[in-house]
Amino acid sequence: MQCEFFIEKRCTSCHQCAQPYSQQVENKDQQLRELIAPAMDVQWLSPVTSADTAFRNKAKMVVLGAAHAPILGIEDAQGQPLSLVTCPLYPQPMQELLAYLENWI
Image (cartoon, rainbow, N blue to C red; front, side, top):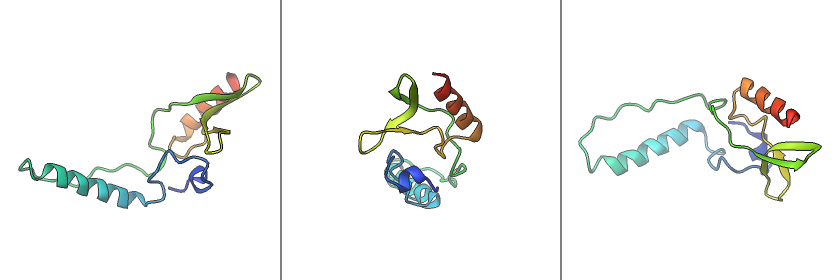
């Protein structure tokens, strides 16, 4: 996933963002196999995956900034407000709703 917030090191919430999604899935699958396989005799199926962007259907945002200019997002590494309404994890309709809410507050 290409995320400008992550590339610019302004948001590091998605700590695996630099790793390709297919590799993330492969690593998680391997970790589960190592944990579960010794304890249970199971038949493994292939992982079910989602799109690598616009898959998140909920958001936890902090209201930052000032009353006349609110920002929905987080504090970046320098402690500055960072709007995450355009975060690529959120589908376009959700980004639009978050932008509307940011202006409405």
